[in-house]
Image (cartoon, rainbow, N blue to C red; front, side):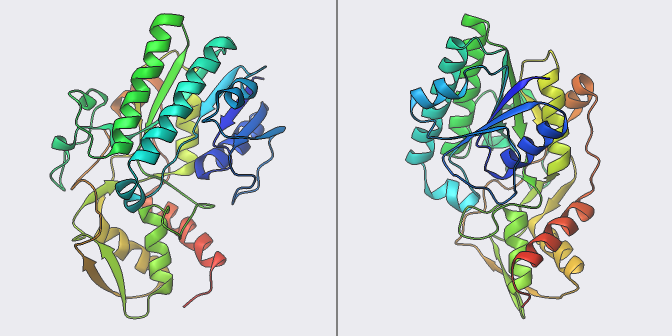
Length: 316
């Protein structure tokens, strides 16, 4: 049993991870700037605090063996496109504080939740893109401030590993989805936003961009298993945590309509953010070093997400 800290433990992935670690038998401390989460969590200890302040990070890491650092200012494509300076500042401060606090507290190892947004935009100009390998992040040219901050923080943690011997694990998330997530308000991701739009739709639903942009989506339970295996491994370089099942946003919307038993016209809005044209994950490294492959198909995972969101809002 390890003494674990989950930062951002009241967020979507963080709240699921808290309960996952408890089921594994670990002691879990959760720290977040939010006092509650959508998913009920069962941590042993909760610290309400702002990790942009060093003293909060320092206190949070005392007596901790493993840190799962998921705390971040982030959201969907509209959110990360609109807000650049707050994302860069907040997330840089969080990670600078967490790295230094881990060093001071002699933390056994720290997991950093990076993102596929760190990849070079020039490799993501085609909806039928080649799956991105971990080495494709360099030379660097992310398409957003959020992606630049993620890449900076990867180098930050690797520098602490090089200089101080801090044991680092880095997972690059590729579009994680599942129940107990935000599905309205501006910070929701595409799968949840599209489920909400299908539920609300009568004759049509809005699609940002032309709908031909492509992504791959990983269900939350598969994500948690990959994170846990990576934390238990001896591998310290970045690893993709995603799937190779590429789908266009139009086709994702049609899949959700099929799940819902509805037929809606797709009305495209080219003035809204849509991100890169195509992004997919090469997960051969995760299979080689972790023995991990996703188990949940997109249609099964999306049905679970749709059913949960429909239970949280009135059917239209």
